[in-house]
Image (cartoon, rainbow, N blue to C red):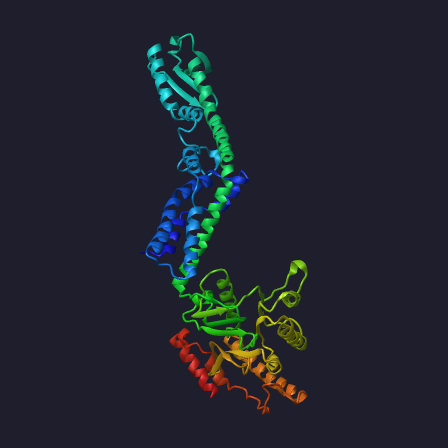
Length: 539
């Protein structure tokens, strides 16, 4: 038995955007191919209905309905199948009025079906049979006049005419009226040819005008069906979303979340579905928030995965609340009324707002509106101003979220001083994204562990990004000075302080620096030999 979501997607693959086309019908701006696409979609819906109803009947006959959610799902599928039912008169109207493959725009003609309108058929017949009529007329006139070289021709200047050589012009009948005289020929028109000319030359314009009239009439006739089409569009959209949810859940190993009356967000081995699709191996992480653990203060290096971790929690909460399975081994969620994010920021030049102003505006919105049932994500607040101002703001915002809003909060920061909040508030827990230093480089583990990070690894990340070695060395020296000055000015220290033994790192030997910068795979044998002689001189 095929998965129902595969059947739905296969049927909807060729469907048009019924909602958009319905809006165009209401605005009288629908194009011919909009309506032909609508017709073809409506013709495929009975197959989709049959598949949906068949699945419901099969499940019920087999008593394959266990828990209440199963019954609700079958009821939903049955109601969606009913909503896909299009009025037979609507489908018939579109079928009999439109050609199977109409032109893209009305002004090109070839939109209204053959046999739908007698007047239009006659005009089309004139255009189609023009050549046959002229050949028959030419044959008759040759027989009537005895002029075997007589020809019926056409040009844009003079229209249709009968061409006779100058020598034979004395033999033309009296009903021939001279239209043009040439050096070696005469051109004539007859009453019969003139009548045909009037009809033929205007047939195209009249056919286009007739098609436009009939098309406008069709739009008028479709107007009463707009509510029905809107219902069909809504049912198709819902089926499309549900089928996509099912496909993603089956393909990406999602699980069904559970909802609880208790205040909690408990996620086991949660994943970020977008990031997971882009990396070879994704590290899942757990998340626990409840009444006694309202805030997670997240520290760790840049590129360690803090933002990804925060986003995955929000995605899991959002997917669960819209009825989708979630990217986690298990998830138990209490009620969440809103999701607030303060992640990433850029300036708003159009409104004259700086990056910091945008950041503070978003923070103000969170502080004013977040409730104890809200999920709040705050990433690197306070970066756009001085260190002390930023730290003070971050501290005050985190404290307000703990004391006043009492929201479920994920608060990522590089201000390690904020980790002291756990000493003051038992509802705040410190967690960090793990990383290890290996041979002057950094390895990101992307796992969330309890406790605060021991350091930020900022210099290692800078080196990883390609910052020149001399800049990194200068930064290390300056960092030692700053840490020494900070320790002298703050004898009480901070959470991570210890007796500083500042040993200035000696300058790296030029030989080591040159070796580190070598790219052996990109060197020719000659270049390698020359470089070897240069290195020997440095020893």
